[in-house]
Image (cartoon, rainbow, N blue to C red):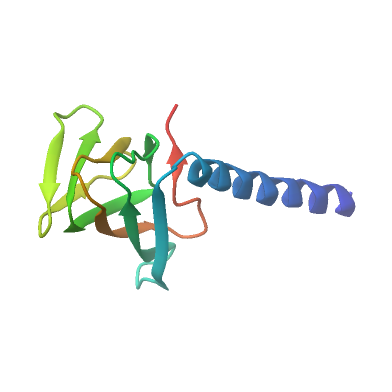
Length: 133
């Protein structure tokens, strides 16, 4: 019985890791650099901050997060398509709030590299990127 539980837990962990790797693998031309990950004062929540660099024409997969995201464009121009909303294009120095669980896509619509600083306030110990169906 104990062995069955250990095997089930191991399969769950491996499956979660494979889903995240698959999501990252589908994002050709996108480089993520993890900057900070820290627990918040609210139990079960954490802040994660990453830099995301997009090659010209690169597009993220359609995905959501288990919490809120603030995307701040560091350089270039990125188009964001949030489910249920009109597309919006942001340029360096502009920011966008993405609500919890809202599926979205980001695309570099400029001729050079584009970069964003993504700050997430999310549920702790859950996959950060959830591919949308």
